[in-house]
Amino acid sequence: MTDVSRPLPDFADPPVIEVALSVQFEAIKGLRTPQLGLLWSEFREPFRRVEEHPPLDAVVERFGVKHVAIRPSIQLRMLEALPAPRCWFLNEAGSELIQVQADRFIHNWRKTAADQQYPRYHRLRQSFEQELGRLRGFLQREGLGDLVANQCEVTYVNHILAGKGWREFGELGQVLTVCDARYSDKFLGAPEDVRTALRYIIRNGQGEPTGRLHIVVEPAFRLSDGQPMLVMSLTARNRPEGEGVGGVLKALDIGREWVVRGFASITTPAMHGIWGRKDANRDS
Amino acid sequence: MPTETLERPSAEYISDAEWLASRRTTTFPAQAILSAEPPIRLIGSPMGGFILTVGDASPPWIKPAVRGLSALLELPSDWDSYGGVRIKPEIVIAALNLLFETMQYDSPAPSIVPTSRGGIQLEWHRNGVDLEVEFVSPSRVRGVFEDRQNGDTWDRDLFYDLGPLTKAIAELSHNR
Image (cartoon, rainbow over all chains, first blue to last red; front, side):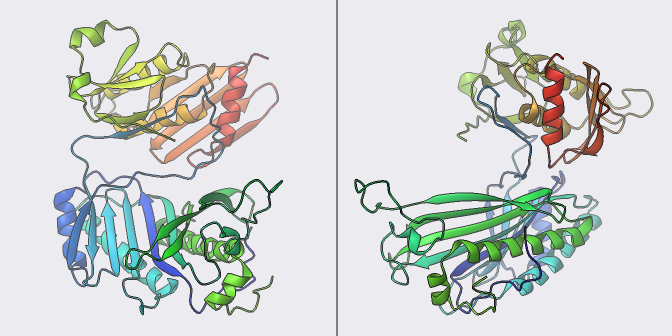
Protein backbone atom coordinates (compact mmCIF):
# COMPACT_ATOMS: atom_id res chain seq x y z
CA MET A 1 0.00 0.00 0.00
CA THR A 2 1.33 3.42 -0.86
CA ASP A 3 1.62 6.11 1.76
CA VAL A 4 0.71 9.21 -0.21
CA SER A 5 1.39 11.47 2.75
CA ARG A 6 5.14 11.04 2.30
CA PRO A 7 6.92 12.94 -0.48
CA LEU A 8 8.25 10.84 -3.33
CA PRO A 9 11.91 9.86 -3.25
CA ASP A 10 13.95 12.34 -5.25
CA PHE A 11 17.43 11.90 -6.72
CA ALA A 12 19.73 14.59 -8.06
CA ASP A 13 21.43 12.21 -10.48
CA PRO A 14 19.15 9.21 -11.07
CA PRO A 15 20.45 6.44 -13.37
CA VAL A 16 17.32 6.59 -15.53
CA ILE A 17 17.95 6.39 -19.27
CA GLU A 18 14.43 5.80 -20.58
CA VAL A 19 10.87 6.55 -19.50
CA ALA A 20 7.72 5.39 -21.27
CA LEU A 21 4.12 6.35 -20.57
CA SER A 22 1.64 4.06 -22.28
CA VAL A 23 -2.07 3.42 -22.58
CA GLN A 24 -3.56 0.25 -24.00
CA PHE A 25 -7.10 0.31 -25.32
CA GLU A 26 -9.57 -1.86 -27.18
CA ALA A 27 -8.25 -2.31 -30.69
CA ILE A 28 -9.48 0.30 -33.15
CA LYS A 29 -10.08 -1.75 -36.27
CA GLY A 30 -9.85 1.19 -38.64
CA LEU A 31 -6.47 2.35 -37.36
CA ARG A 32 -4.42 0.65 -40.04
CA THR A 33 -1.32 1.60 -42.00
CA PRO A 34 -2.94 4.34 -44.17
CA GLN A 35 -4.59 5.92 -41.15
CA LEU A 36 -1.32 5.79 -39.20
CA GLY A 37 0.24 7.68 -42.08
CA LEU A 38 -2.45 10.32 -41.84
CA LEU A 39 -1.99 10.44 -38.10
CA TRP A 40 1.69 11.26 -38.56
CA SER A 41 0.69 14.64 -39.99
CA GLU A 42 -0.70 15.45 -36.53
CA PHE A 43 2.69 14.84 -34.94
CA ARG A 44 5.09 15.69 -37.73
CA GLU A 45 6.33 18.72 -35.84
CA PRO A 46 8.54 17.90 -33.95
CA PHE A 47 8.41 14.17 -34.73
CA ARG A 48 9.85 14.24 -38.24
CA ARG A 49 11.23 10.72 -38.43
CA VAL A 50 9.17 7.56 -38.85
CA GLU A 51 9.96 3.91 -38.22
CA GLU A 52 7.78 0.83 -38.46
CA HIS A 53 7.93 -2.01 -35.95
CA PRO A 54 5.87 -5.14 -35.23
CA PRO A 55 2.93 -4.45 -32.94
CA LEU A 56 3.23 -5.16 -29.24
CA ASP A 57 1.05 -7.88 -27.76
CA ALA A 58 -1.80 -6.79 -25.55
CA VAL A 59 -1.08 -7.31 -21.86
CA VAL A 60 -3.61 -7.18 -19.04
CA GLU A 61 -2.82 -7.50 -15.36
CA ARG A 62 -5.47 -9.94 -14.22
CA PHE A 63 -6.06 -11.49 -10.85
CA GLY A 64 -7.71 -14.63 -9.59
CA VAL A 65 -6.29 -16.84 -12.33
CA LYS A 66 -4.65 -20.02 -11.15
CA HIS A 67 -2.34 -21.71 -13.59
CA VAL A 68 -2.75 -25.45 -13.24
CA ALA A 69 -0.65 -27.88 -15.24
CA ILE A 70 -3.60 -29.67 -16.84
CA ARG A 71 -5.15 -26.45 -17.99
CA PRO A 72 -4.18 -25.59 -21.54
CA SER A 73 -2.83 -22.13 -21.98
CA ILE A 74 -3.84 -20.50 -25.20
CA GLN A 75 -3.60 -16.99 -26.50
CA LEU A 76 -5.58 -15.98 -29.50
CA ARG A 77 -5.78 -12.82 -31.45
CA MET A 78 -7.55 -11.92 -34.63
CA LEU A 79 -5.75 -11.54 -37.89
CA GLU A 80 -8.18 -10.38 -40.55
CA ALA A 81 -5.34 -9.08 -42.70
CA LEU A 82 -1.67 -8.41 -42.18
CA PRO A 83 -1.34 -6.85 -38.74
CA ALA A 84 -1.04 -3.08 -38.84
CA PRO A 85 2.41 -1.99 -37.68
CA ARG A 86 3.44 -0.07 -34.62
CA CYS A 87 4.60 3.29 -35.93
CA TRP A 88 7.31 5.30 -34.26
CA PHE A 89 7.29 9.07 -34.73
CA LEU A 90 10.68 10.36 -33.55
CA ASN A 91 12.17 13.79 -33.05
CA GLU A 92 15.43 14.57 -34.83
CA ALA A 93 17.60 13.63 -31.86
CA GLY A 94 15.68 10.42 -31.29
CA SER A 95 15.34 11.41 -27.65
CA GLU A 96 11.55 11.45 -27.68
CA LEU A 97 9.16 9.37 -29.67
CA ILE A 98 5.53 8.46 -29.97
CA GLN A 99 4.52 4.88 -30.65
CA VAL A 100 1.07 4.16 -32.04
CA GLN A 101 -0.62 0.90 -32.98
CA ALA A 102 -4.26 -0.21 -33.18
CA ASP A 103 -4.50 -0.76 -29.44
CA ARG A 104 -1.61 1.19 -27.90
CA PHE A 105 -0.30 4.75 -27.55
CA ILE A 106 3.12 5.35 -25.98
CA HIS A 107 5.32 8.38 -25.35
CA ASN A 108 9.00 7.59 -24.73
CA TRP A 109 11.89 9.70 -23.54
CA ARG A 110 15.35 8.25 -24.08
CA LYS A 111 18.73 9.52 -22.95
CA THR A 112 20.74 9.88 -26.13
CA ALA A 113 23.65 12.01 -24.86
CA ALA A 114 25.73 11.72 -21.69
CA ASP A 115 24.95 15.28 -20.57
CA GLN A 116 21.23 15.02 -21.28
CA GLN A 117 19.08 15.59 -18.20
CA TYR A 118 15.94 13.57 -17.48
CA PRO A 119 13.12 16.03 -18.22
CA ARG A 120 11.08 14.77 -15.23
CA TYR A 121 7.75 13.02 -15.15
CA HIS A 122 5.44 16.02 -15.08
CA ARG A 123 6.79 17.36 -18.38
CA LEU A 124 6.43 13.95 -20.03
CA ARG A 125 2.94 13.54 -18.59
CA GLN A 126 1.95 16.91 -20.02
CA SER A 127 3.22 15.90 -23.47
CA PHE A 128 1.45 12.56 -23.22
CA GLU A 129 -1.83 14.24 -22.31
CA GLN A 130 -1.63 16.66 -25.23
CA GLU A 131 -0.68 13.96 -27.70
CA LEU A 132 -3.40 11.61 -26.51
CA GLY A 133 -5.87 14.45 -27.04
CA ARG A 134 -4.61 14.86 -30.60
CA LEU A 135 -5.00 11.13 -31.22
CA ARG A 136 -8.57 11.21 -29.95
CA GLY A 137 -9.34 14.22 -32.11
CA PHE A 138 -7.96 12.41 -35.16
CA LEU A 139 -9.98 9.27 -34.43
CA GLN A 140 -13.10 11.35 -34.06
CA ARG A 141 -12.54 13.27 -37.31
CA GLU A 142 -11.86 10.04 -39.20
CA GLY A 143 -14.91 8.34 -37.71
CA LEU A 144 -12.80 5.61 -36.14
CA GLY A 145 -14.34 5.72 -32.68
CA ASP A 146 -12.94 6.61 -29.29
CA LEU A 147 -10.41 5.08 -26.97
CA VAL A 148 -11.66 2.54 -24.45
CA ALA A 149 -8.61 2.26 -22.24
CA ASN A 150 -7.98 -0.95 -20.33
CA GLN A 151 -4.36 -0.72 -19.10
CA CYS A 152 -1.99 2.13 -18.26
CA GLU A 153 1.73 1.60 -18.02
CA VAL A 154 4.71 3.53 -16.69
CA THR A 155 8.20 2.17 -17.40
CA TYR A 156 11.54 3.47 -16.16
CA VAL A 157 14.75 1.88 -17.43
CA ASN A 158 17.93 2.49 -15.44
CA HIS A 159 21.55 1.82 -16.34
CA ILE A 160 23.53 1.24 -13.17
CA LEU A 161 27.15 1.32 -14.20
CA ALA A 162 29.89 -0.73 -12.54
CA GLY A 163 32.51 1.19 -10.58
CA LYS A 164 30.10 3.23 -8.49
CA GLY A 165 28.96 1.19 -5.52
CA TRP A 166 29.63 -2.20 -7.09
CA ARG A 167 32.25 -3.84 -9.33
CA GLU A 168 31.30 -7.39 -10.28
CA PHE A 169 27.96 -8.73 -11.53
CA GLY A 170 27.87 -11.11 -8.59
CA GLU A 171 27.64 -8.16 -6.19
CA LEU A 172 23.99 -7.51 -6.83
CA GLY A 173 23.49 -7.22 -3.08
CA GLN A 174 25.44 -3.96 -3.18
CA VAL A 175 22.69 -2.51 -5.37
CA LEU A 176 19.51 -4.36 -4.42
CA THR A 177 18.15 -4.72 -0.90
CA VAL A 178 16.53 -8.06 -1.80
CA CYS A 179 19.74 -9.78 -2.91
CA ASP A 180 21.70 -10.30 0.28
CA ALA A 181 24.10 -13.17 -0.57
CA ARG A 182 23.86 -15.55 2.39
CA TYR A 183 24.81 -19.18 1.76
CA SER A 184 24.28 -22.29 3.85
CA ASP A 185 27.96 -23.23 3.47
CA LYS A 186 31.12 -22.14 1.67
CA PHE A 187 30.75 -24.35 -1.41
CA LEU A 188 29.68 -21.62 -3.80
CA GLY A 189 31.69 -18.49 -4.27
CA ALA A 190 30.34 -15.30 -5.72
CA PRO A 191 28.10 -15.91 -8.75
CA GLU A 192 29.38 -14.99 -12.19
CA ASP A 193 26.28 -12.90 -12.70
CA VAL A 194 22.76 -12.57 -11.40
CA ARG A 195 19.49 -11.66 -13.00
CA THR A 196 16.25 -11.25 -11.14
CA ALA A 197 12.59 -10.53 -11.79
CA LEU A 198 10.10 -9.55 -9.14
CA ARG A 199 6.39 -8.72 -9.22
CA TYR A 200 4.44 -6.71 -6.67
CA ILE A 201 0.69 -6.23 -6.53
CA ILE A 202 -0.58 -2.67 -6.71
CA ARG A 203 -3.68 -2.19 -4.55
CA ASN A 204 -6.14 0.67 -4.27
CA GLY A 205 -7.37 2.33 -1.08
CA GLN A 206 -9.81 -0.51 -0.49
CA GLY A 207 -7.05 -3.09 -0.73
CA GLU A 208 -8.26 -4.41 -4.07
CA PRO A 209 -5.60 -5.41 -6.61
CA THR A 210 -5.53 -2.97 -9.52
CA GLY A 211 -2.22 -3.75 -11.20
CA ARG A 212 1.35 -4.92 -10.77
CA LEU A 213 4.83 -3.48 -10.50
CA HIS A 214 7.37 -5.56 -12.40
CA ILE A 215 11.05 -5.14 -11.60
CA VAL A 216 13.67 -6.83 -13.77
CA VAL A 217 17.42 -6.54 -13.26
CA GLU A 218 19.83 -8.01 -15.80
CA PRO A 219 23.58 -7.80 -16.36
CA ALA A 220 24.69 -6.10 -19.57
CA PHE A 221 27.53 -4.17 -21.18
CA ARG A 222 27.16 -0.60 -22.39
CA LEU A 223 27.32 -0.55 -26.18
CA SER A 224 29.35 2.63 -26.44
CA ASP A 225 32.32 1.52 -24.32
CA GLY A 226 31.66 -2.04 -23.13
CA GLN A 227 31.38 -0.96 -19.51
CA PRO A 228 29.54 -3.50 -17.31
CA MET A 229 26.19 -2.34 -16.03
CA LEU A 230 22.97 -3.55 -14.53
CA VAL A 231 19.88 -2.78 -16.55
CA MET A 232 17.03 -2.29 -14.15
CA SER A 233 13.55 -1.80 -15.55
CA LEU A 234 10.51 -1.01 -13.46
CA THR A 235 7.09 -1.27 -15.10
CA ALA A 236 3.89 -0.39 -13.30
CA ARG A 237 0.81 -1.57 -15.19
CA ASN A 238 -2.63 -0.92 -13.80
CA ARG A 239 -6.20 -0.30 -14.82
CA PRO A 240 -7.56 3.17 -15.62
CA GLU A 241 -8.86 5.04 -12.57
CA GLY A 242 -12.09 6.11 -14.21
CA GLU A 243 -13.39 7.07 -17.64
CA GLY A 244 -11.63 9.11 -20.30
CA VAL A 245 -8.21 10.73 -20.38
CA GLY A 246 -8.54 11.76 -16.73
CA GLY A 247 -8.79 8.12 -15.68
CA VAL A 248 -5.73 7.25 -17.74
CA LEU A 249 -3.63 10.07 -16.28
CA LYS A 250 -4.65 9.21 -12.74
CA ALA A 251 -3.58 5.61 -13.32
CA LEU A 252 -0.26 6.79 -14.75
CA ASP A 253 0.31 8.94 -11.67
CA ILE A 254 -0.26 5.91 -9.46
CA GLY A 255 2.04 3.84 -11.65
CA ARG A 256 4.76 6.47 -11.52
CA GLU A 257 4.48 6.63 -7.74
CA TRP A 258 4.91 2.86 -7.52
CA VAL A 259 7.91 2.95 -9.83
CA VAL A 260 9.64 5.74 -7.92
CA ARG A 261 8.88 4.40 -4.44
CA GLY A 262 9.65 0.87 -5.63
CA PHE A 263 13.02 1.96 -7.02
CA ALA A 264 13.97 3.60 -3.74
CA SER A 265 12.72 0.65 -1.72
CA ILE A 266 14.57 -2.03 -3.64
CA THR A 267 17.90 -0.22 -3.98
CA THR A 268 20.38 0.19 -1.13
CA PRO A 269 21.01 3.38 0.87
CA ALA A 270 24.62 3.29 -0.34
CA MET A 271 23.43 3.56 -3.94
CA HIS A 272 21.01 6.31 -2.93
CA GLY A 273 24.00 8.30 -1.74
CA ILE A 274 25.72 7.86 -5.11
CA TRP A 275 22.59 9.03 -6.94
CA GLY A 276 22.18 12.03 -4.64
CA ARG A 277 18.96 11.20 -2.85
CA LYS A 278 17.67 14.45 -1.46
CA ASP A 279 14.14 13.92 -0.11
CA ALA A 280 13.67 14.37 3.63
CA ASN A 281 12.29 10.88 4.29
CA ARG A 282 15.20 8.93 2.85
CA ASP A 283 15.62 6.80 5.96
CA SER A 284 11.97 5.87 6.47
CA MET B 1 5.67 -19.29 -20.79
CA PRO B 2 7.05 -20.67 -24.04
CA THR B 3 4.62 -20.17 -26.86
CA GLU B 4 4.63 -21.07 -30.47
CA THR B 5 2.95 -18.90 -33.04
CA LEU B 6 1.95 -20.46 -36.32
CA GLU B 7 0.94 -18.20 -39.14
CA ARG B 8 -0.82 -20.15 -41.88
CA PRO B 9 1.85 -22.85 -42.04
CA SER B 10 1.37 -24.28 -45.51
CA ALA B 11 3.28 -27.44 -44.68
CA GLU B 12 0.66 -28.34 -42.15
CA TYR B 13 -2.40 -27.76 -44.28
CA ILE B 14 -4.77 -30.67 -44.49
CA SER B 15 -7.52 -31.29 -46.97
CA ASP B 16 -11.14 -30.26 -46.45
CA ALA B 17 -12.14 -33.89 -46.31
CA GLU B 18 -9.58 -34.62 -43.65
CA TRP B 19 -10.62 -31.91 -41.30
CA LEU B 20 -14.31 -32.44 -41.88
CA ALA B 21 -13.89 -36.13 -41.18
CA SER B 22 -12.03 -35.63 -37.95
CA ARG B 23 -14.23 -35.75 -34.90
CA ARG B 24 -11.54 -34.19 -32.80
CA THR B 25 -11.19 -31.02 -34.78
CA THR B 26 -13.39 -28.04 -34.90
CA THR B 27 -13.04 -25.03 -37.14
CA PHE B 28 -12.53 -21.49 -36.10
CA PRO B 29 -14.16 -19.63 -38.97
CA ALA B 30 -12.55 -16.26 -38.40
CA GLN B 31 -8.90 -16.00 -39.17
CA ALA B 32 -6.87 -16.15 -36.01
CA ILE B 33 -3.42 -16.69 -34.67
CA LEU B 34 -3.10 -19.00 -31.73
CA SER B 35 -0.19 -19.49 -29.46
CA ALA B 36 -0.60 -22.83 -27.81
CA GLU B 37 0.96 -25.45 -25.66
CA PRO B 38 0.00 -29.12 -25.90
CA PRO B 39 -2.48 -30.71 -25.81
CA ILE B 40 -4.05 -28.07 -28.05
CA ARG B 41 -2.46 -27.98 -31.47
CA LEU B 42 -3.01 -25.51 -34.24
CA ILE B 43 -2.87 -26.16 -37.94
CA GLY B 44 -3.75 -24.00 -40.88
CA SER B 45 -6.92 -24.47 -42.85
CA PRO B 46 -7.03 -24.28 -46.64
CA MET B 47 -10.37 -22.52 -46.29
CA GLY B 48 -8.84 -19.45 -44.80
CA GLY B 49 -9.35 -19.97 -41.10
CA PHE B 50 -7.54 -22.02 -38.58
CA ILE B 51 -8.38 -25.30 -37.00
CA LEU B 52 -8.14 -25.85 -33.30
CA THR B 53 -7.22 -29.50 -32.86
CA VAL B 54 -8.23 -30.82 -29.50
CA GLY B 55 -6.12 -33.64 -28.12
CA ASP B 56 -7.51 -36.61 -26.24
CA ALA B 57 -6.16 -35.34 -22.92
CA SER B 58 -7.89 -31.99 -23.26
CA PRO B 59 -10.60 -30.98 -20.82
CA PRO B 60 -14.01 -32.23 -21.99
CA TRP B 61 -15.56 -28.77 -22.01
CA ILE B 62 -13.29 -27.46 -24.75
CA LYS B 63 -14.95 -29.08 -27.74
CA PRO B 64 -18.53 -27.97 -27.00
CA ALA B 65 -17.32 -24.50 -26.02
CA VAL B 66 -15.33 -23.99 -29.20
CA ARG B 67 -18.16 -25.40 -31.32
CA GLY B 68 -20.65 -23.09 -29.65
CA LEU B 69 -18.46 -20.04 -30.07
CA SER B 70 -17.64 -20.91 -33.68
CA ALA B 71 -21.33 -21.22 -34.50
CA LEU B 72 -21.94 -17.69 -33.27
CA LEU B 73 -19.46 -16.33 -35.79
CA GLU B 74 -21.60 -17.66 -38.60
CA LEU B 75 -24.70 -15.76 -37.53
CA PRO B 76 -25.67 -13.15 -40.15
CA SER B 77 -26.70 -9.59 -39.44
CA ASP B 78 -30.24 -9.37 -38.08
CA TRP B 79 -29.89 -12.96 -36.92
CA ASP B 80 -32.74 -12.52 -34.45
CA SER B 81 -34.95 -10.59 -36.91
CA TYR B 82 -34.81 -7.68 -34.45
CA GLY B 83 -31.75 -6.06 -35.93
CA GLY B 84 -29.28 -8.25 -34.04
CA VAL B 85 -25.67 -7.21 -34.65
CA ARG B 86 -23.20 -9.81 -35.98
CA ILE B 87 -21.12 -11.35 -33.24
CA LYS B 88 -17.74 -9.67 -33.03
CA PRO B 89 -14.86 -12.13 -33.52
CA GLU B 90 -12.71 -10.34 -30.98
CA ILE B 91 -15.37 -11.05 -28.36
CA VAL B 92 -15.33 -14.73 -29.25
CA ILE B 93 -11.58 -14.73 -28.74
CA ALA B 94 -11.94 -12.93 -25.40
CA ALA B 95 -14.57 -15.42 -24.25
CA LEU B 96 -12.42 -18.38 -25.18
CA ASN B 97 -9.43 -16.87 -23.41
CA LEU B 98 -11.50 -16.29 -20.29
CA LEU B 99 -12.62 -19.92 -20.28
CA PHE B 100 -9.05 -21.13 -20.60
CA GLU B 101 -8.05 -18.92 -17.66
CA THR B 102 -10.82 -19.95 -15.30
CA MET B 103 -12.11 -23.43 -16.13
CA GLN B 104 -10.90 -26.57 -14.42
CA TYR B 105 -10.41 -29.88 -16.16
CA ASP B 106 -13.81 -31.18 -15.12
CA SER B 107 -15.76 -27.92 -15.29
CA PRO B 108 -19.10 -28.11 -17.09
CA ALA B 109 -19.24 -26.46 -20.50
CA PRO B 110 -21.28 -23.28 -20.52
CA SER B 111 -24.34 -22.59 -22.60
CA ILE B 112 -23.33 -19.96 -25.12
CA VAL B 113 -25.86 -17.45 -26.37
CA PRO B 114 -25.48 -14.39 -28.58
CA THR B 115 -26.66 -10.97 -27.48
CA SER B 116 -28.40 -8.57 -29.83
CA ARG B 117 -25.57 -6.03 -29.40
CA GLY B 118 -23.03 -8.38 -30.98
CA GLY B 119 -21.79 -9.77 -27.71
CA ILE B 120 -21.85 -13.15 -26.03
CA GLN B 121 -23.28 -14.53 -22.84
CA LEU B 122 -21.90 -17.63 -21.14
CA GLU B 123 -24.31 -19.35 -18.78
CA TRP B 124 -24.17 -22.13 -16.22
CA HIS B 125 -27.20 -23.33 -14.28
CA ARG B 126 -26.23 -26.31 -12.17
CA ASN B 127 -26.09 -27.56 -8.59
CA GLY B 128 -28.31 -24.71 -7.43
CA VAL B 129 -25.90 -22.16 -8.87
CA ASP B 130 -26.74 -19.64 -11.58
CA LEU B 131 -23.78 -17.97 -13.24
CA GLU B 132 -23.94 -15.66 -16.24
CA VAL B 133 -21.03 -13.85 -17.88
CA GLU B 134 -21.77 -11.24 -20.52
CA PHE B 135 -19.19 -9.86 -22.93
CA VAL B 136 -20.27 -6.45 -24.22
CA SER B 137 -16.80 -5.91 -25.67
CA PRO B 138 -13.45 -7.68 -25.13
CA SER B 139 -12.78 -5.63 -22.02
CA ARG B 140 -16.33 -4.98 -20.83
CA VAL B 141 -17.21 -8.20 -19.11
CA ARG B 142 -19.85 -8.47 -16.43
CA GLY B 143 -20.84 -11.45 -14.32
CA VAL B 144 -23.87 -12.28 -12.22
CA PHE B 145 -23.76 -15.10 -9.69
CA GLU B 146 -26.35 -16.61 -7.40
CA ASP B 147 -25.98 -19.66 -5.18
CA ARG B 148 -29.49 -20.58 -4.10
CA GLN B 149 -28.27 -22.92 -1.39
CA ASN B 150 -26.21 -20.50 0.66
CA GLY B 151 -27.63 -17.21 -0.61
CA ASP B 152 -24.34 -15.90 -2.01
CA THR B 153 -24.77 -13.42 -4.84
CA TRP B 154 -22.62 -10.99 -6.75
CA ASP B 155 -22.84 -8.76 -9.80
CA ARG B 156 -19.47 -7.39 -10.86
CA ASP B 157 -16.93 -6.52 -13.51
CA LEU B 158 -14.93 -9.57 -14.55
CA PHE B 159 -12.25 -8.16 -16.79
CA TYR B 160 -9.51 -7.54 -14.25
CA ASP B 161 -10.28 -9.76 -11.29
CA LEU B 162 -11.22 -13.30 -12.22
CA GLY B 163 -11.04 -14.60 -8.67
CA PRO B 164 -14.81 -14.67 -8.02
CA LEU B 165 -15.45 -16.31 -11.38
CA THR B 166 -12.77 -18.93 -10.85
CA LYS B 167 -14.29 -19.72 -7.45
CA ALA B 168 -17.83 -19.87 -8.83
CA ILE B 169 -16.80 -22.21 -11.63
CA ALA B 170 -15.04 -24.41 -9.10
CA GLU B 171 -18.31 -24.65 -7.16
CA LEU B 172 -20.15 -25.56 -10.35
CA SER B 173 -17.65 -28.27 -11.06
CA HIS B 174 -18.13 -30.22 -7.87
CA ASN B 175 -21.16 -32.13 -6.74
CA ARG B 176 -22.45 -31.22 -3.32
